[in-house]
Length: 481
Ligand code: UDP
Image (cartoon, rainbow, N blue to C red):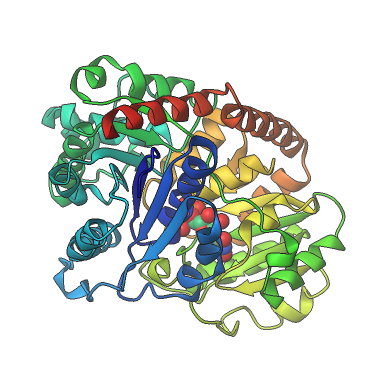
């Protein structure tokens, strides 16, 4: 078949938080920039959830120029993870990706229209040598913001002494052109070891690619985007350009395509609530709270006296990301909620076990606030819905995201944990009321709506992210020719 189109393969590492923005990137490349796109979705051994296989992924495969292939689940890698690893979640994703490489290679080699571009997320860099071997140009897609991307990209240039001052003496980590990273928000709890080495080695790989895409836009993060685009050090060492291409977020499904009865039930319930009167609570695809924390949250919601929709998960005592590989799997009972909670709140709230149509809920006019774990997709979905947030970070770079939302952008208040790490009911009621009822919430709502407009503008014709895409597309044509 003779075609002048550029065929790009996008590799999505395990987890809905990686898959959703990768699918959105694929859609954008196919519908606005004339690419043929194949998305290879890598799933972990237990990540065979309804959600991963579900309509959310499959429905997109009928878009012109976009095809999705889900890899068979990899072998179970859990016994290969060092039990003392500081990031078992990250380690598991990386090992799964390594296991999937032979499948990825053979899929690419068997494609009738050979692809000339490979785009991976930051967990997929082990596929880059294979892509070069196959004469493909290489891109990395950061599914997070420019500030965290900067931390990662500058990691190889941070001295051991500076890392020690940060990790041991708890001084802020200084990244050229960016806000310093407070120790309380850091991922570096030791100046050496697997987390540090993993970061540095991965950053070196990323700096060698033909281009870097970041799911943010210039007006949201002017300092950090400048730092990664033309920072003095990076522009000397990065091989290719850096493109802010966001905000890429999942769009609302048309009503006739919504199959789940549960989803429709929630949205019909929201239809009956007053405008901006409901607080939505969700901790991402995998966020999990302890039993004490779940109970405090239930009582805090009651104390706040606000209407609510809460995505609840069975508590887990020692792993805040316990459900990460099982997003939406199974329907769980709600027996772990405090006695009488469901009957006392049945007129004002809904509890949904494990998974809800988040974009649709955030976009609904009745939703007025969002208690979020600050995963970057959730943050962008909230901003693009004009909904202010209560920032309640759990793992990965979420504490940095929370600081950005509350201290820099002024679109969130932060839930403060007491000693021992629990956020108690009075604090929960207070932060919810600050967003939903107080004057402070009114100000945050105004700001978040301004960012919504600026995000939409970035992706419209002549907008900064649209222009990034155009340049990237041109570059791919040249490289792939
Ligand atoms: N999500 C959803 N329903 C849920 C929980 C999560 O649709 O009940 C989606 C959410 O809209 C977002 C993604 O899953 O697009 C989670 O990504 P995020 O970066 O916020 O967090 P992660 O799950 O990666 O920690």
